[in-house]
Length: 301
Length: 301
Image (cartoon, rainbow over all chains, first blue to last red; front, side, top):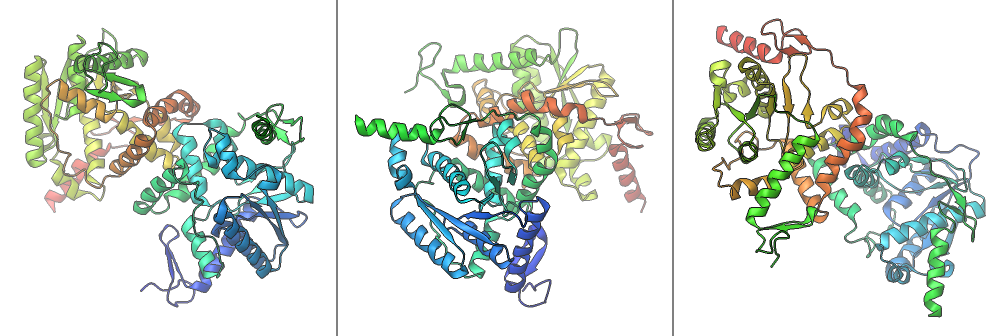
């Protein structure tokens, strides 16, 4: 039986890539310290910032909100109801209950009211549901944060998410996307700052933290996520990680440290204000307003 | 039933990543053309070069030798007997038989005579057998080619091999190794040129060419290769390729086209002549001579 390296109590977790065994109490402490260190070392936000956590109701976003609360940060929540049947209803309910538990303000917006629910939008498009959904979440996170006066949006992306994105970009050597992959996306040109305090924490570590902190999160994957290539890349990374613990962390952190600085200079995306809504876009009308027009055209025809 | 895109006969092969279906005859033609194009586009060698193919007895090395012979190139063979029991005996026998079939000269050297067999060397070292074996093959390929007056050594590394190496280097962002990964390693500083005409051909394509050309090759993997991380990376790439045909080719060729040129400037390895044998080394005594000393020390003690 492994013992906690801090207190010699029975360990509940063994993290081979950190060569650590920890009891419940010290695991929770380790996790929260790691979140704090990540925030500080990437200078994600400061005392002056008003901070908004994008919370889906899953382990990662509720977990990061919980860790921030435990660490004494004042951060409010934003939940976007995607309108995906029972899945979305459960997500909103659990998010609301969690906000009440930690006594922080939660803003809830509904895609159905702002544009349309994901099932409707999915049928409108050739693109995979995850792609449309991602676009809309990014748009409404940014739009809502600005409207409500927040300067920073926090998302729960973990190391597995970041590795899957990086792997996808590396397999086709999409250098522009690689240049933009960083745990802090700076504010400016119509965007608030976006940061990922869990970027160095694996999905398993995040799930364990949520479990040990008694967070009641949505366990099901989104019903539309099946078949997404990010899931394939996660499986691939998991199989390598199992044989060589630490591969994920090295792949991501060495990329951030050594490779991305070589790429940064090359990115130069020109952004305009959308002619309809004023949000930033590379074109003339942003993709969300174009979706709205498409919906309108469908209703008319 | 798919038809050959060239002659409308029944296709024996479908290559989804090239959107090609081909009959036996046109597949063989396609393969040999692809080898020829690869040789030309990377300027691997010219009429003036004396060319030596490193042949293990497997599908790739016998296949590339066969393709060169069909294309009218004069290339001799070099087989290194590794001394791995029946596996090596079979490899040498099949290589000799093949050389006779195409009427080309074959040089055979034996590790046992030059230093020691792989089983002996494996026990001498903490390193995996593949690592010692790779070092020795590179050393004796280079040494023998120079001694016999060849200017170019050809190896049978295929796209799957190259992708596995690249994946390993990318996962730890080993930029120095990445900078050196190219289908042509130029001559100089004690090295003959080394080239890989199958670098754009998958393992499956290579196996099919060997099969359709009636090449009697060794089908078994080397008994020591089990558990090598390159095999894991090959499985990983295979699972991605199955879902997204063309991933391997894109991963490797876009790396060569876009990424490696960014890295090349950074490599600057200082090489010396080994104090004992004169072969190039980054140190004072090369790793093969150090192995010989270690063997000697063991015999004395």
